[in-house]
Length: 509
Ligand code: F6P
Image (cartoon, rainbow, N blue to C red; front, top):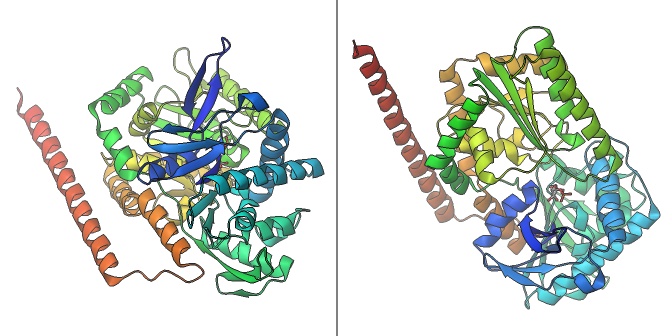
């Protein structure tokens, strides 16, 4: 497996001591649980610029063989902050901010992709399966095929793949497509993303396409066929739900509500501080609801967790300034002493703390302007084993295509967003429970392990479509029925307990 980042970041303290912390982002959360249950090596960057001499050696962590790929300070600037996050990221997210094009950034991207390919070629066994992740490594499939024609190569895009009209702006569009066509199978979050890719190959490379396949000359000149299809990513439902059911997390969620002044409605936003996440639009809607007098602290409050991200890229710096000014203005205008209208957290939280926050929040605001999937939406419903809470979800996320029973919004439509937030607050509990049950079923039936097996099956048979045997389908259905029955039983017990305690309270003199 190769991803831009290893699952752990190397942190050097001022006194020179080295420690390893969990890397940011949904990719790491998802792939970490997949890789732990499979023997494999993870090739990736350790998250800090290294001097030649300081390159960390490969090491083993939680049963995974981790092979660091060093990046110099210039490569962090040009390959990571530059080409990956200031050229590709805006183009792949509907150009919410303008993309920047620099030829030296592209040169650095090629150089670093080559280094990743060489590291993969070095650690992969004969005939291995190589799974490359995300937009930072789009040249790697073809580079690996050149070095190691014996391996099978898959690539998964965690972010959207843009329509050809936007993709065509990239001066290096041919190189990117040719790089990807070195793979046997390409996975995307949505059907539309896979179609955008196939269309780009047809229009920009004049490559012959048939349904979801593209044929193009491989490194030796022989035609090679690649299949591109949608396999939406998910999360470790069982693992996260187990955590959310622990007495510690449940107690912490009650404590959090208490610390926040026991509001009637606690709203929550959890995002990397990224302009794609629609944080400004969400705050605008929230501010207008306060202004209109429709909501007010301490009755209603909002916790916004905004994890630091790509802090040296201008558009991210600008966003941070705007968000922090807005939070300050909202609290200054609408919050009485001791009851902030927005609680703003700009640091990383532990998984336990996140689970407790999800369990505490009455309304979860997921309002991206464009997002490949948005695993926060899936994490929220996973933690709500009590069937409480309401999910407000942007229709511009990949998650919307699976969780369309949520309270759906178009974040550009501020008036509509305000109405959706009020609807999420005011819908009767019994209807919200019904919705939450449906959302949870979808995520539990399509968890990260199923995603990984589907991807690896598709990779094994590509360019042919894998044939699921009837026996496999039957077994999966049986497991699903059993899981749903167990959940219904638990829900019935919980309802009985609530009724019994209400009856006891009523019978007290
Ligand atoms: O999925 C998008 C993505 O860029 C991942 O590749 C990455 O792990 C995550 O978001 C966080 O971004 P970054 O690695 O730039 O901090």
